[in-house]
Every structure is written in C-alpha cells, then in structure tokens.
Length: 112
Image (cartoon, rainbow, N blue to C red; front, side, top):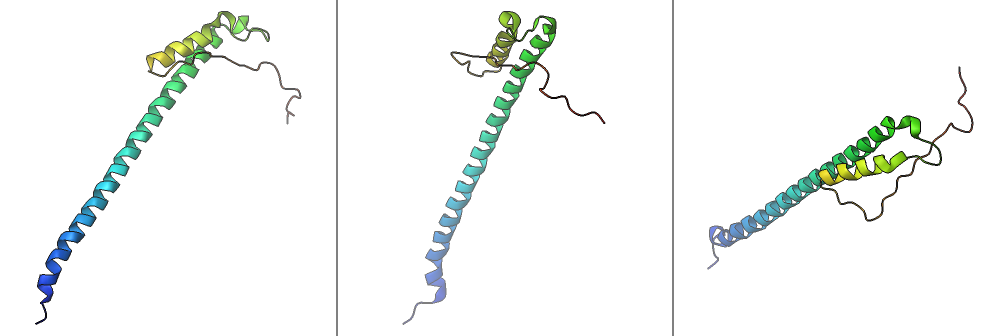
C-alpha cells in the first residue's frame, strides 16, 4: 500500500520550519551586528571631529603667534586634541604629532 501524502509531508514541514528559523535568526544577527558596527563608527568619527575642532580652536586663539617654524606655539593644539579625544574615550597614541602647512600657494588663483 502507498502512504498518503499527508503522512509524508508531516516531517517535511518541521524540517522547513527549522531551516527558515535558522535563516531568519542568522539574518537578524547580521542586521544587529551591522547596526552596532555603524554606531561604533559614528561615535569614533564624532570623537575625532571633536578633537580636530578643539585643536583648530586652540590654533585660532594663538593665530598671531603661529610661525612657519612653530605651527603650534606652546603645544596647546595637540594637548587640546588629546584631551578631547580622551574625554570621548578614544585611545591616545604613544607618540602624537601635529603637522600643519602654512603660507600662500605658490601661484595665486586668477581673479576674474
């Protein structure tokens, strides 16, 4: 005697439910992990921006004392950036450097 279709399908439904459930859980885990990664990236970028703004503010405050040979008089810009980065929980590098280029461009832009 040939078994009816309903008896053969009973085990198949349970198998398909398990496969679909595992797939949905995996996709959910990837979505949550991607969201956390984007949040971390946003926080680190915000901290780096805040540190750059702190350094730029110090440089602006000491604008008259800036020379080509001493682009950061007193080291205030570097320390402001490091303090801001530490406040935002960014790791401070062991050796930090601040590199600036000052002066006018070699050729002035054409005026119209």
